[in-house]
Image (cartoon, rainbow, N blue to C red; front, side, top):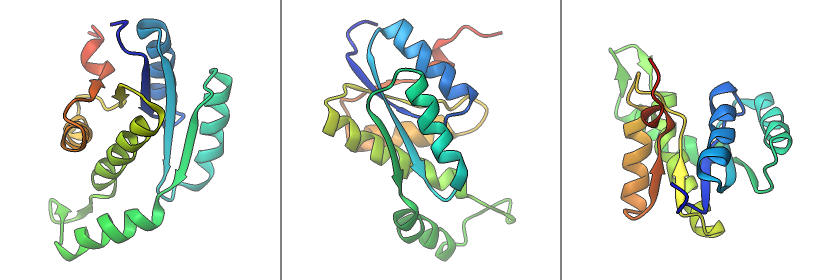
Length: 152
């Protein structure tokens, strides 16, 4: 596991990704870069930055992706009439490829050799993140903690 030098974590600042952040530092003994996407959630962004700082992160990316999200993801989704069970908008689902895209770009910018997400196996978010990662960089290492942890 120690061959990973730097990882870009999709970081919300919540409990799961904060635990994952510390786990990455302790398990992989690597540098962690956090990336928090502003997709319109507002006041959750600054606490995420502060928490990353408190956890010792030096490279913290909090980026406003709202315009790109709406233009390149939400509008096409509306045009396709993409609704889950014909009722529910797919805002969270459609955001994953954009987050993955920016993580891969940050990995290239910072020299990171891995990316990480906090998606559990409950839904399809693991697939959404990882298809995006591998489509953009087939050689990237992907760390998926929920698959590595032996939780019962």
